[in-house]
Image (cartoon, rainbow, N blue to C red):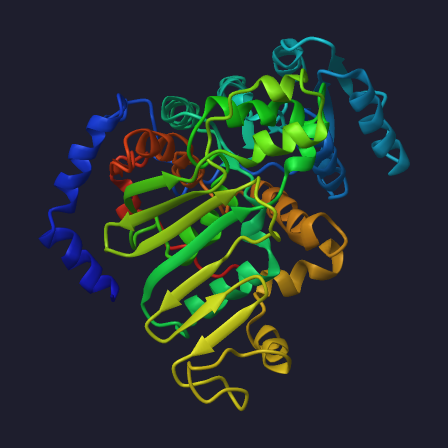
Length: 458
């Protein structure tokens, strides 16, 4: 639809009234006087950015190194449960010829991060801890005057997500969930193709996080597996939805003037794989064999947007199968899909295909990248290609620093992180009620209609 048609659609379907009714799904239907909509928020410029880090395990250390490699940045505080993680982080900085003498360090207590926030007064805080602490840490960071940058997911419950929204709006602080996949080369290229009109009107997307993580069960006392394994017992639904959903959401321009999330249904398979893996790899009396695994091995959800588009979202961290995020987007003129990168167009692609009955492949895909590589990827690839996850981590960090130093809106706003993360609770509620549809909370309180389109960044 054209923008004109979409606005007519919104009016003729009484979309405003529909949003008003959806507020019943939260206790935060009205924005208080001191709160400000953060969709296109630009914070005052930070010429030198002082950062504190909460959690410096695998992900946290990576963020520390990438942040510190950029000009105009300074690490002022590091907090972790374990002293060796803090010491290794200092060593990373020293190996980069960065003095650590003035950096305050904290460890050994799960409250030390709060002391750090009050003592070092950072401009921004990076949070890379277990899932269940993300929400409260983000809220506390913003209350202490810092912008919060949080590993995925942003929080585990809709209540926590509303707390994040209210705090961000009240204290006028960014809270960005660091969805690094949105900065992948393939994802950026797909966005560029779509914004160039080559896919026509968008109809359907497919997003997934399918990643065999059973090996993490070997992390019994510390590390991701030591707490993540417990989640398979106490929750049902999609525990990790954002890596696949984030890019598809931006392709469709959801929560940004064009369309937004409406409802979701979700179903899970039986829970069998974790129990099987535990019996085959650990003693019968091991703690993993005493868990009552509740969450199905595979979860499949279908999202319906207000314009009627559909998105299939899948999650599976248990089954023996290769990694994929699916990353599929279907339009009226063609289709793009990931893992491996594929494309088909109604009128074909140059000399490589004549119509949509065959995939562009081989040299044709090379030509597709050559023609449609995102300008952000082309600008930053040389300096970020050796960073994590194929360079996406480096591009993400570069953009965080660039936006803060120039006082421009972030690429991902607080409402997007909340909407993408809300699937954790919504899918659980649907699974527990035999696929009953769930309405998405409108964290923007209707203001998504006036939020700027997510355009191509050069």
